[in-house]
Image (cartoon, rainbow, N blue to C red; front, side):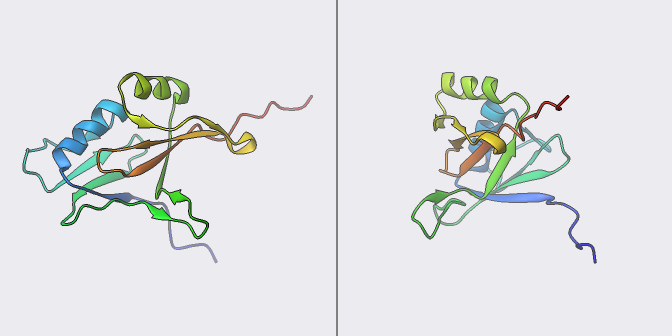
Length: 135
């Protein structure tokens, strides 16, 4: 039997200030809000080219979506596949975003992490490596 689940439509991230966070996502990741964002907005819907959404939801308490794995490593809840991995990395670096070094995961591609203003850890992924066809 096939799964009932078709795709992930929306990811919800807790933020302190949806307008400020939306501005950060626009500046650093080039994501656009679904509509105009007022300074007192309690949530903002960001659109991805895939038709999926990231909702930035104002949280009552200062929290983020990260969690600690059983082994003690800080883990994120979202991976974003990007189109121009190295260019984005350089732009984030130049623009002062909090990022980690690039990791080469060989058969799984490359990734690095970026932290939004609320400390939400985002996994930025290059996508699956292109394997040349054997002759």
